[in-house]
Image (cartoon, rainbow, N blue to C red; front, side, top):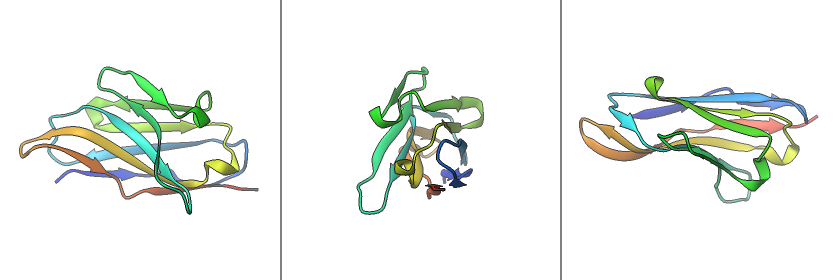
Length: 120
């Protein structure tokens, strides 16, 4: 069973930085797309950033220039470096792995989420 696990969340002041790693455990041959989504209270879940197996990246307009997504495919890990954080970045952040190839087939998986709170 594949289980992504996020870490690195917490409380940070406006203007501060956080780095979120998410590692997938289990028997994995390959992962196509890796991404980060977030959900703020009372709002729907939204895509923050994604990176393909080939390294192509896309970002939500609200985080461009402040957040950077990267991956280590050998470790089945995706990272989100968040700089110049704003109170509106406060949300639960979820990692998502798409088209994960395992001995049982191909599937998509979500992490449990990690809380990021930006406040003074």
